[in-house]
Image (cartoon, rainbow, N blue to C red; front, side, top):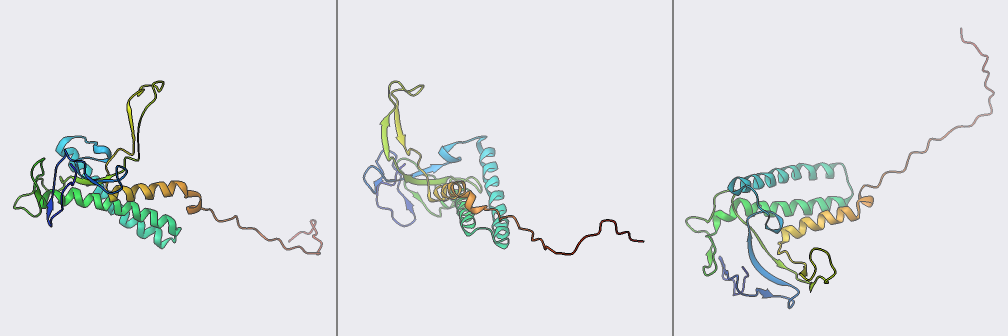
Length: 208
């Protein structure tokens, strides 16, 4: 469901049959996609699954608050702290959508513009949909005929529509994986010094 018209205050134009807003031609487009589940729209357990997912996000955010405070106090590498902060910010952004988005917007449809702050939202607390909007179909081709399983099928990179919160989490995780040696660099082993002396040692000396 792309944003394909002028965005008026407190309104979200919806039309899944348009081509979205082309920012950089076909390589970067803006859409309006309401994601009810996790990444790539994965869902589980219906309403109970949605509640469980939102509560999990809430616990992760609460844990993140204490963890960031802890690593700052322990003076971890600044790069690692920034990466953790990016992951935390992304999780918080998606949590806010899940908690409140269903309360402050009407239900959107193909031909209806959802309005902000209606008398009744489209979902209750903890059941809001996460909004995705960034689409980067950088490569569009197809698998060669000799390729196993997917031979001849279309291939697109990068096909998922995501949001800034998702990008923040991904950047944080990837940076930690790439620079973990720098972030968790061990201190060199302490060298023990020895003092040499010319005094002779008498092994036969007895102490009474």
